[in-house]
Image 1 (cartoon, rainbow, N blue to C red):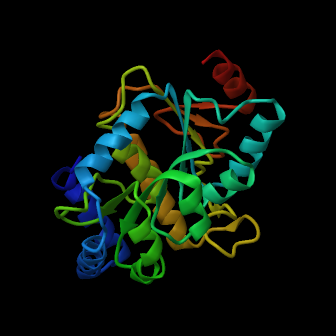
Image 2: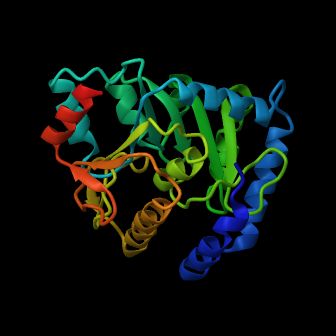
Length: 270
């Protein structure tokens, strides 16, 4: 599950481009590691094995990003009587997308989060939480320490070299990090659909707490989204599963983009 050495070149490029402080990323890992040491009856290998078993029982994996198409796509599916709580479907949310799923009463199998888009309610609502530590979210790790300690099915990731309790599976943003995490666990028969993955100059209102509407992304955010897009494309050489974007506002060069009617037809066949 650790792909630190493989991803290190990407990481070095990113921190140089954004002028990130690698020492802060290391401090975040150490800070989280100290919290984890206080957890009782928790073992990373056991939780990873449990997650893999959970994943293996699903035929379809729906990954929800926080892009501007997220709400429209979900509401379209619900209006067309698609049961997103079907036992063969695994719903995985990137950070704040989990709030919309909870609002729409869609069961969440896992949330991948650096903790800037979720509330304590999402911990209660999800089967698994994958918490990421980096230099800019140490305050969030402090804020959610109680939830981190009490939630059993929790896995921890970091940007830098991993330790005994924290892994580095690669990836940069919450959305692309989902695919990097899943890649070594996937069964060949499983299909992946990326919903709300829009690499445009706008960000969705579920991206962060406090956003009331979709709005134009800052130049820095646009650059982050560009990296996320590139990282997902690069991962195509490592994953042989069928991967589709759904109703994406910026179609990928590597993967097929399904419009809403095409996706509706395909998911009804699965």
